[in-house]
Image (cartoon, rainbow, N blue to C red):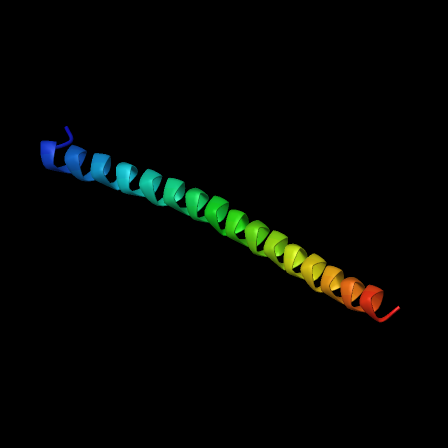
Length: 61
């Protein structure tokens, strides 16, 4: 027969393992989202630089 203490320990272990797994997945999702946002901000900055250069060239011509 398994003691109540061992059942509690096993339950806590499964709960902590599940929590760690879910936290890891959430961290992966957040990391991907941050990466995507930074990538888009970089693209926006590139577009702004290109528009500024185009405007300067238009003024010179």
